[in-house]
Length: 197
Image (cartoon, rainbow, N blue to C red; front, side, top):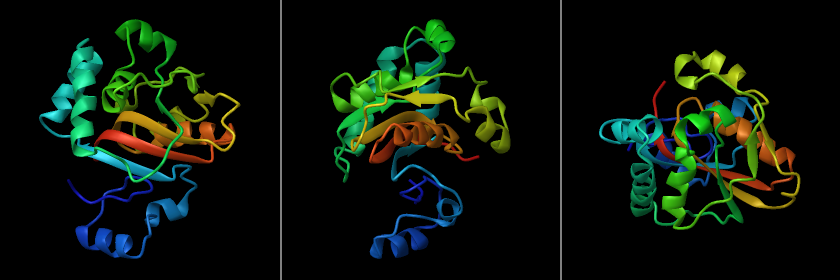
């Protein structure tokens, strides 16, 4: 997989990746410019075949078994993360989308990764948003702004936040922002696949 910033998930060259890791630096020029809220990002795959088709089946084809198996596959390539966390949660769906699908594919994938059911009450989506795939980068950032709220009793806790696909990182940043606002000490993202924008 292409080298990426361990703080925000932005892709960059292998040479730059080695340089930063040798110096224990994780931020890139993108994260230096904005408050990312995420402390680290771990990516499993690039959003390409066959992973992209499997994600589409899990998301839109009603195949929650594939969602679980994708989580297990992620566990094979990232058996342990070099960070500690107290709680794990997935990016929540809107009530409307949850009713359409019958499940949150990201939650099922995280369940597969963890081997146990994750917390599903840490975050809630408080604003219905348009699907991010239909929007430009600028529209994506606006679309999810203030779309999430977190439980208020996360003081000092470290949270692992999971999503199936990351493109601009807008959704993960807004979720991390809500978690930090609720007192989370650290928010680390785990993403099944990173799409190029």
